[in-house]
Length: 232
Image 1 (spheres, rainbow, N blue to C red):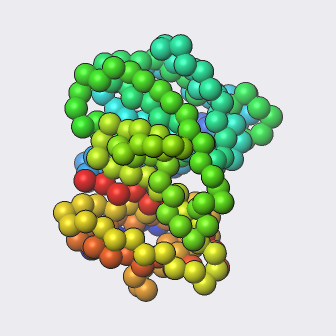
Image 2: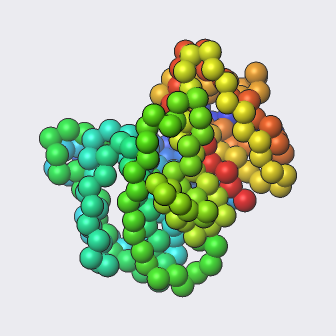
């Protein structure tokens, strides 16, 4: 089953310095029928204005991934970690037993990033943080793992049985993704449009929540950049 969620179906919060689009219940947006997709709890599509950001705040018992699409995002946390990430990089934080952190845009341009939260495979983990780089050229007509429980070179480690892939389809190209039984797949388009299994069309910022499909054929007639997440 492929459920489509148009970009316009998301809840929008506009605070002036911050514009967010929520794919799941978050902050002032509450829908008891849209709390999560398996262990995926949050997908916020955020735009932060220059010299603004999220001041120091706390998290617990959550795996948090940030993927910057444009601009530069500065992270600082109570474990002493500090880093600036941009497109082609991922940051992963395990909040575990508790961590304080901030996410700021210290530059003169907007920063666009995706903030994803996942429930961990177990609680009471020690808080940790890392940044990784990925090769943008390896996304071409390919699913490139950037976050996974099976971590490796240029793949951030996450404490959950999932993998986040980034992909870029050139016009007229196809990628096949074979999914194991009894798992979920989430697809989110950042640029362009794709068609899944010849019938389901996703445009920019549209998403799909997929179950009971073991073969996904991803095509694009005009080109696309997208994220695919393999979930338990």
